[in-house]
Structure formats: structure tokens, C-alpha cells
Length: 92
Image 1 (cartoon, rainbow, N blue to C red):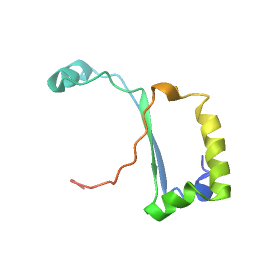
Image 2: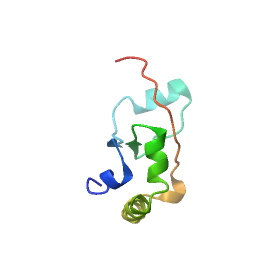
Image 3: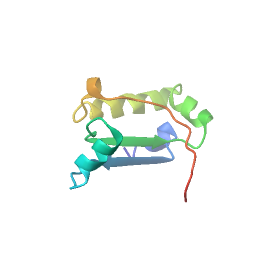
Image 4: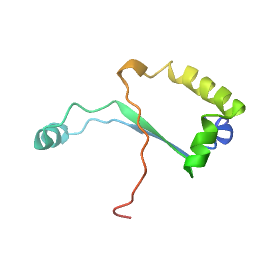
């Protein structure tokens, strides 16, 4: 991923891996929540312009295709979701 980040203008990439804790059941029950994910990945761009570049530039599209090919090795894409968000800090 590190070698593809400049081509995609990615400012930050974070993987969050699920973990089991004694609190799992209580937290899910308190919110009537769905079972947890195995984990998630967060890719961040500094601007929508950078994101649009990543989705249109020839070198960025090639890097994105290589990244997707790698992801297919360990992510069940059919059971995954994808969303674009605008981050808003509430605390910190």
C-alpha cells in the first residue's frame, strides 16, 4: 500500500482489526447492534479534488487496480460495504 499511496494521493491509510473482549455481548445488546465486523480499512484524502484525481488519473487507476487485486486475497468483497464520508471531529 505504501508504494501506491502517492499515486492515489492518499493522505492516510488505517487498518482496524476486530478483537474479542468480555464486553462484546453487553455492548451489542445495549444497542441492539448487528454482529461486529472482522475489521475495516480507512483511506483518507486531503480533499475531494485529491479523491477525484485518484478516481480518474491513469496512474492512480492502475495503482487502484493493483490494490484491489491485493485486497481480493484477504477481503470478502461481496460481504463488505464501502462508503464515502466527510469526517467531523467531536472530541479531540
